[in-house]
Length: 440
Image (cartoon, rainbow, N blue to C red):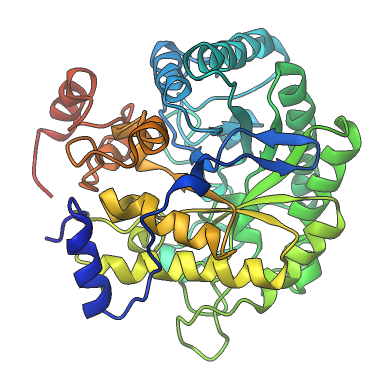
């Protein structure tokens, strides 16, 4: 078992020993700087990434734990809150408690956004930018608690000797309806007071799976233009129906970590090497559609989580040092930034760096590698991480996420995830009830 860094000198030693060459700086002031994207001014360079709490009401409205979680995020000082995956179709919910925005519960979402904004303004002197993630869960759909996959194509890497019935492969006509649902969700998000919408295209949910639909027939498979059609046309449609100042963006998987032809952003030579050619093309296309901000990620949290969220303890022994996984994501993001310098990018995979995370993030931002530092699991464990970085000059070793994967254990067991270690009063009982307190 590895462990996150509670001492920055420890990080420096291993960074040198492994030759991961992650940059580091003691000067963190860049993380406090504002960032302008279009007409929107982001208060600082720190973001809470989208982390599902699976704690909505039955109709998809924010529940009590949802409000508690976002109240903590709002107080914590991050300039951006990337509001978690919110379903746009009932059958596309990942679980019965996934948020689901629709006309009937729009006022509940309005109240949630207003509360986030007012809390942040009162606590920190600024309201965070809040972006809603609009999603269809595709092969991971469980709207009523049991799997009801809707897939772009059969994938033997996941399905092995038990392929999902071909009836679950969605038609082009169904994907047309998904596009309209995503566009409608963008309009609803604007009416609810969100600052922007993320047309989610990551972690092998439906939009992301299409990116690697090399062998699919029809308008949504085969060519790169077809495989990216749902994302591009949903973004174009959302931009058309929403106001000029409303941010239309995406959390984008640029590397799946599966061999061709089942993975996007991988070399076609049979290796798992990151090949940025197609992601670069896509980012340039999105820039041409007016997108000026993207949230970059890699991997699949269900299948190869060591790629997108390197862990200290998890469901298997990873095939690489966690620090190497962090380096892949950060340097990969930097490579894309250099290819499309006008696009503002948010990074991922910082949590494993522990107390060294702000120092590494600041160095990348100062070097032009990306523009905003995104923190996922850290937000569960340490919701005031941004305030501490800005006001205290760093992160506390006693408050950081230890990357133990217990929040994910709860989610996989069908519960409402949160930090079992740092928020134990709420989530330790849930963990013990669902997971038996067992060790991984």
